[in-house]
Length: 452
Image (cartoon, rainbow, N blue to C red):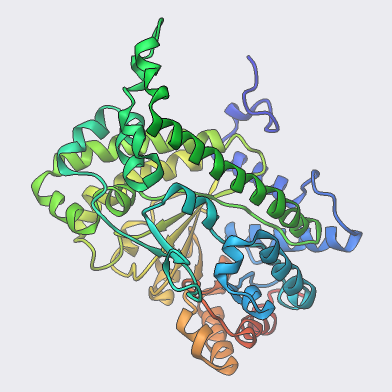
């Protein structure tokens, strides 16, 4: 049988989930496809990668790993705005290069441009975000999500019947103004044998304008790849591992964030619960398939889920157990089978959920907590899950270095015992202080050492 996973072992299907995860992690540590800039860079890379893998596996590394909330600091130190970085790719790279030359060795952090391709989104008239220069002042520090009811309640059946068709002909025309003409298409499954009538829509002036906009946006995205790609590759080559997690969302968040919206989805739980459950099942299957296709990449080791509407206060525990967690768990289980580490970013507080979510195999899940009780999280999850986070974003922006270092010391003492802890912020705020990032790193090196 042909191996449809080039780069992965031929006997991949015969390996256990734990063996697959170990293979991916060993490959991550001992990457052979990186052209290191020096022997020291290679040694540094392996030390840092091993440190992270040990934390995932609930072992004691040489010291506590650190994930610094650098945010927009490289741009500000370089004297440019986020708006400039979003629209001028070269200037964004220049800012990161300058930051790395001055601070990478000290902070053990390699900056790469983490900005949306604003010009491409301008061309496509994207509706889900506002960003500097498009709905926000040019000196704004980042983008904002614009929630709306982009899926109508009567459209549940359309989504359930054929999600790809619904996405193409209904959802995308609503969130991309330049793609409004896609609603003129017939379902693509109508194109069989002699498709003259079905493809006649391509002659429509609106459709032709849409296709031109898509090509214009593709030119911007191609330029972005050409500028960002070589710079990003220098990170691992310089000794800084880039786990490069895949991204997904809980099915309920996909439905509630960008399709129905918060107010509508909360009402739907009472008015049309069966429709929600059927839609969640369909969305789950679609995203499992997409993620498992991505998982054929041998360099992929993790997938991150930002968890939104499952947080404390958004829904009752019964609703969490009915609508939120089952389909999320189904996706996580599928990823674990493929040997992937799952990183769950619990935004807000998850204090009421801790007892019910500790259901995954040891070492397969890492929880990133924003505002949860870390001592309780360590007690309830720490024997099976790596945990990270909880340094308040407000502290990194407004606190003193002494305050930050002391807060990190207490976290390390509580959560670092026995390993399985990564020091990081609860969430990344714009405009952090450089000296506060230094304080986080200093705390890890002073209080988080397991062995010398």
